[in-house]
Image (cartoon, rainbow, N blue to C red; front, side, top):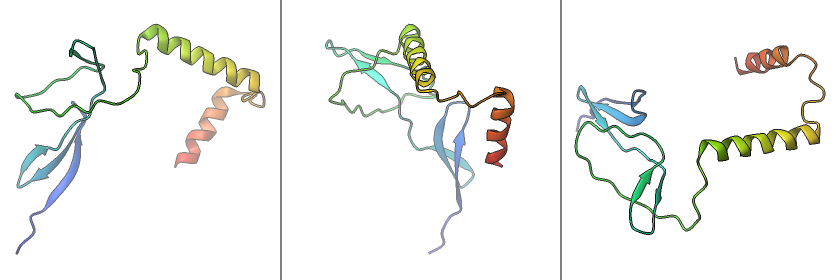
Length: 108
């Protein structure tokens, strides 16, 4: 039996994992976050573009949905920064630009 060569890739334009198989790109699957209303209406929290009619499986989580509005995100971010400030997380940073540059150099 001869194994076919395939390569795992990501299509950046639509953020879908895919496999190149025999010269064709096959999309594996894509996970999206959504909120399901009590009426059964599904509201996707991100834009979705598909090239053809597709099948989907829906998994319902036993938890309350997060508030994803821009105002709620901004409020959570401000709260996190205030907590970090109170904890003195950044008090030893004299030059924030140089500090970030050093962090990025550690990635190399």
